[in-house]
Amino acid sequence: MKFRCLGVDPGLGRLGFGVIAQERSTLRVERFGCIETPPHSVLPGRLLLLYEELHKIFEERTIHLVAVEQLFFGRNTTTAAMVWQARGVVLLSAAQAGIPTVEPKPSEVKLAVCGNGNAEKKQVQGMIRYLLGLSAPPKPDDAADALAVAIAGIALWRWNSGETPSP
Image (tube, rainbow, N blue to C red; front, side, top):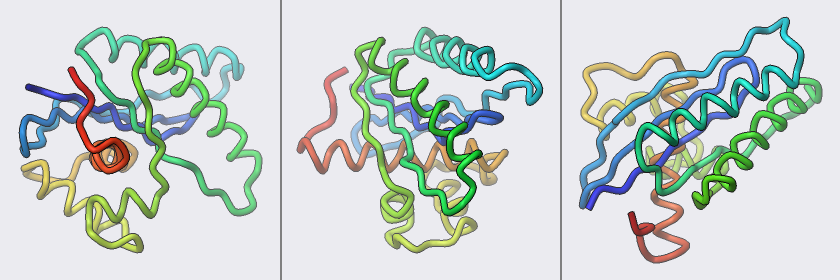
């Protein structure tokens, strides 16, 4: 039985996404990329674009779980506010579609992918390539990060619930 997780690296200008299918112990990439919004457009229009593009992904294939990375920001509160709003669109879209969500922290993503919660970005990208049998790390970085979030989401769901969501 195939189980799909949509991983999301939230952002307003560029939202990374990756769909991973798990069948038994095998993970396979089905789709990844970025949803980009025009930087000079009004905020509501940019959020609407994210919403519409996410729903297209939900319509393409059955998604059983959405994993959205939790955010950590130091001092740039303007950027943080924009990303939080994009993240809210993702959570709302999943809720409307009736898809459960998990929200791994960045350290949990690194731990799930590399076995080390303090792994460097290059280590994570290398392990994504290895774990998913890709010839090269996915590009752009936001999409690679989203695939890592999907892997962590599957692991967190299984850890917290003791099972994989039923397709």
